Figure 1 (cartoon, rainbow, N blue to C red):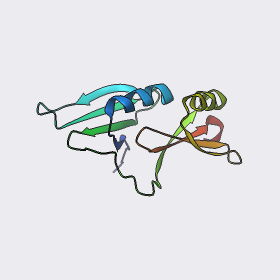
Figure 2: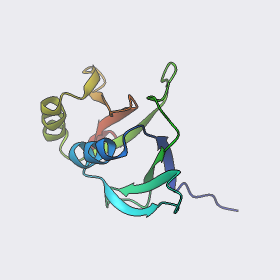
Figure 3: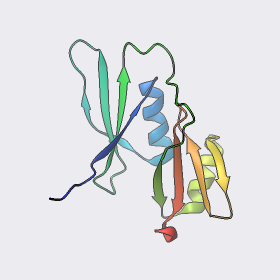
Figure 4: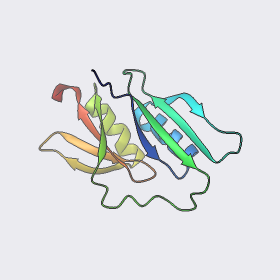
Length: 124
């Protein structure tokens, strides 16, 4: 038996804002979408084009407020080949929420407050 991780899900309050953020910050683009005729939800799968793993963004029509992330003690991680350029991009976007220079990593947060770790390729 062999398991293969294929995607992670994040629920988002403003789908269009999130799609723009993930495109601008991490070069992730929509690869497929599920949207029932009743419009009750939309699921969008994003890919950065470098791995088979995808990010699933789920928008639910009935949600009338931003999601409560509690203590937000979870994150997704992204490896980047040009750490300095990525840091510059994210700094200009104003989305860096935590930086650990000693470890050589930093985190950005998306429009819903989810944390995304950015690691240099040399770390992995």
